[in-house]
Length: 97
Ligand SMILES: [Zn+2]
Image (cartoon, rainbow, N blue to C red; front, side, top):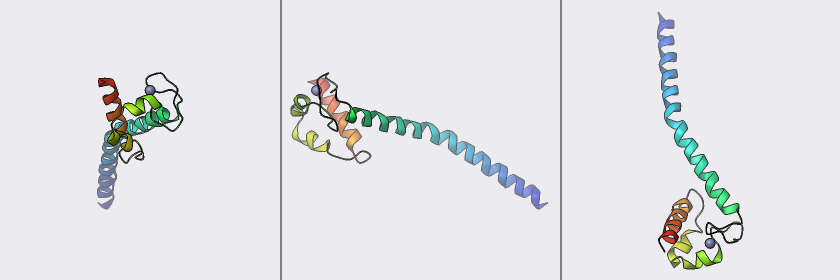
């Protein structure tokens, strides 16, 4: 009797676990690929405009100077703490210039 209940629990939990994986995986994969993207941008020596930029800087000096002061400041945020949003916003701003 109990083993049937035990099997039910195992099966049910397993299904929950699988459902969880199905939901979590794409999101986590996206976060990881986003993270890699921003890291690559930071470590590259080419600005998105094609000019040379310093490693660990988001943009070359020319692009950086075009940004409003607030946006420049936001680029000093850490990854996962607003940097991604700041970078995207800065890119959008530079595209619209
Ligand atoms: Zn640039």
